[in-house]
Image (cartoon, rainbow, N blue to C red; front, side):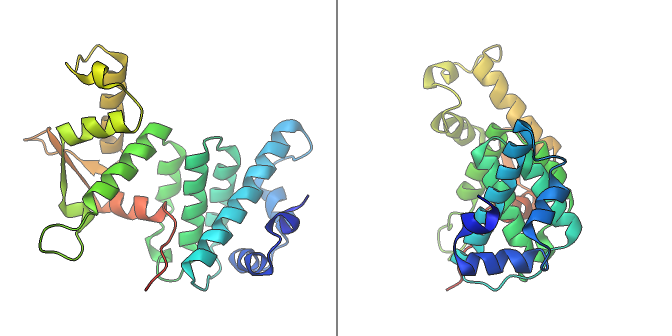
Length: 228
């Protein structure tokens, strides 16, 4: 079954055709996947097709007319998506492509986002998304908060790690740095800081906050929302 059959909806097919500027879908897959004849190639081709399906559905749900995406972005995003086995990260690739196709969001999708997402682990993506949602909550007396202006305390971050299923409450009770769960939490936090997605003040390492780069990155890796 090819991509056109998988989409099976004229509106979604139209969205994909706009994104790739009329290039036949089979050619896009061929450019992205070196060979789709062996088992690995077939898996990669399937992920490319599913990425297109997710992207097209996101754009349709957002109710926005898409535009052509630069060839280099399309190919690099789809090539990375073809290798992504983690479903949540795969969906982030689809969202990145969807945002690149929306006129109001396209300027925020930087080529550097591709390199960052390529190196991102599942726990890093999950924690970053949690931080973004936490910092996006409306503050008292405000209709909408600025995510990059809100701080997250170390205690809240530890609770989130447990809530996300990466550790048990027992393993975090005394926060032993030699415990594997604790070490993975520390490494995850340090990785997000090292990539410039969150900032940790030099004079107070008990808090962290999203950087503007981190805000734009995670917004671009989430499905665009329908405007009122």
